[in-house]
Image (tube, rainbow, N blue to C red; front, side, top):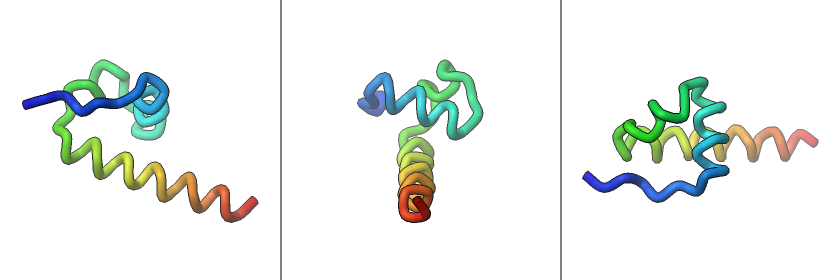
Length: 51
């Protein structure tokens, strides 16, 4: 299985959002990473709308 191409900044933000070490994030299945990225983007857009 190929790794998901994430930028370093995105990987760090996602690891912080999920509260997992960066090393664990790199070994997660791609479908979970995509789901969590979508959740993170949705949460960020809601906080931006409130401001």
